[in-house]
Length: 110
Length: 129
Length: 118
Image 1 (tube, rainbow over the protein chains, first blue to last red):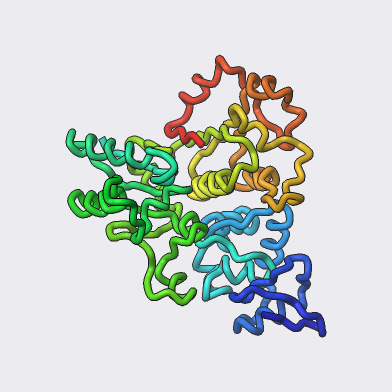
Image 2: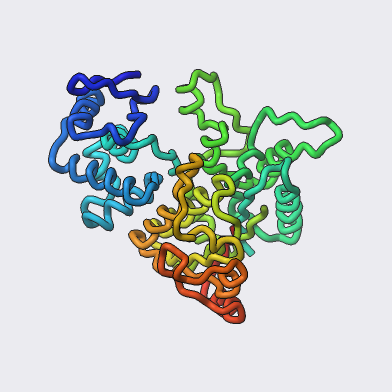
């Protein structure tokens, strides 16, 4: 599948994840959010940008439990819990955070 | 004593799974409890329903199914290890156009949290392979 | 809470065994358990400096180790003799680790409830 952003053609997987992490920018996130019926707020950006930084820094895709813990460590328990994260990404916080951050599909453990 | 068992090796690459199976039977015979058996790494290959070894070889997957049935043993396959190796949970199998999953009877697919829980509840964790 | 010691002994970049082991280590830590990691034998190569696994299409697993501290996994141990046998010392590793003499490993293990060999 191909995603068009600012007249750039970006390759995506059959589940809509960016194939090349390096092609991501914020305009790509906005486009992917719209395609997935997510209205981006500051709260979304905080999680998306953290996860992108985390992956580029550690080359690690966490599972859901580990992801939630990482958010708690970075932003505190009031954000590092599945209730808060599901409010932002109702269809799956880890999956959609990674998708909008231009990262590969994470493992589905937990 | 309450045991948690972890099996990491494929049934075709090592006899670790068979040793685990014998250990579990011996432990049960002595009145111990097996809280859970967790299949990780290549250990998930124990749970493929359609594995069909020749008749003169040990039908280990079938043995696990019978063990689960007779002793209500919780056989848990790690979802990410399984997915990596093509043993899909029902949702993913259907998304990929398959009618059903490939999981043998008596096994269930779940996450690593089940491993942590088992190690917290059991008196001993024993890993095979 | 229990104390877990994961003992890693296999060489680096031999299949996905290490990635899956790091997943179990990180998940255990994410469940607020106390976790230590001991690199023994060929396991010391996991943290060898100057790796370029991406050139062979392999995961940069040494970098994943750097995430451990985020989850409060701060106790990474290695055995002095395992390093020496391979011509290495602690300065050859990309993370700071606690170097333990072989004679003290058994005593280290007594501090943990659960020891997982990988």
